[in-house]
Length: 277
Image (cartoon, rainbow, N blue to C red; front, side, top):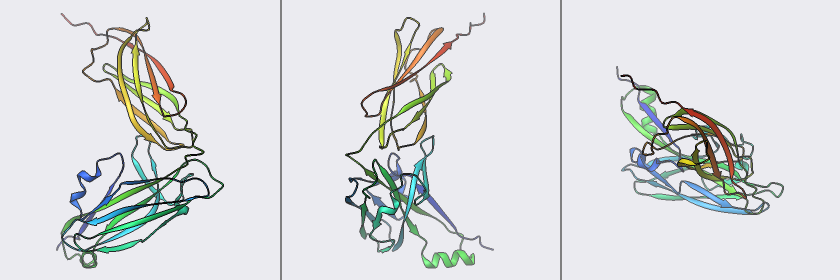
């Protein structure tokens, strides 16, 4: 007896990930991977993205509205529309929810965003673009008539409404944990406590008891949404000289694009084990 056909749906997180490197597995491409719309309260903005059939057969593509969020580790989470506090899903209108494309054909999907007058700061939503199984494939799968495995690709097109007038970016370092001393590895807990989507970068300076910087390495850049908490795992490059035995202070400085730099620190000890004779 033949196995039931298996359809492998691969959800690809767009923006800040290398999705296009594997999109050739499926039969379509989508670009751009995000829409950033600078729209003031009470005004309307618009954008477009392109879906193209890169395969040799016709495809049916569904477009659906969702919300998105990032986990503490920075992984994309696709959520029901309207489920996050700063969702703009109910303000979004898009041109079609289902389209059939011949081989090599492409279509522009238009997106319109009407922002209410009584809101401020940044808001966001997502359009999930999914290649659909063809009717023959669905029927064969239901009847267990094929053992074919085919990859069906889904793209997530992020929509970010930015409020250029009422933007108030803010951020804080809430904790720093030393995971290992040699090479130094830190877990930095970071919170976006403003009302704007931000991109943050910075440095870690390792200072000895005299205050001299003996190591320095970079953090980021990384994005974050308002209200988002991130746990950043950063490690000193192995190309840096090893720390000598003693007490050190790791100073983390992060620039989130606001009017100030946030900073936190953590003491730690380096113990060098004596070599056996």
